[in-house]
Image 1 (tube, helix red, strand yellow):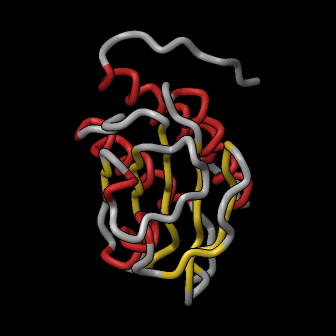
Image 2 (cartoon, one colour):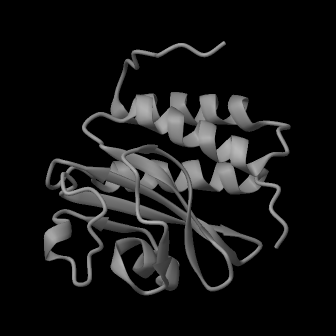
Length: 163
């Protein structure tokens, strides 16, 4: 049984606890949909000041909405478009302090002001992206980037997706 956790310690210690929880949630579970759903729920209850946490999955052509926590979202995003499509196309994490200043930003939730997008890569193939939005400008920093990249690596290691 999972309960809402009040995380203590430094931010790094809190992220380490979340990584441990993620491993426990997904270990041995073959359903990638279940694992992505639990991963988004875990981050949604852990991260403060966020309004959307979820995944877009690459279908070979574009990103398609996957499991998430938050308001209904854009369903399809072309590679190279918006923060998600750019991060996926370039295969690198993007931390955007002000999404309104990002060229081609796709506004799904009008309350979003900052965003972090982490590509999910397995066996050198793009699987999708982890996308997190916040109503606060400048919400995400290098610590978030470092640990969310680790989070995605743990997740990708367990994902049973036919490539």
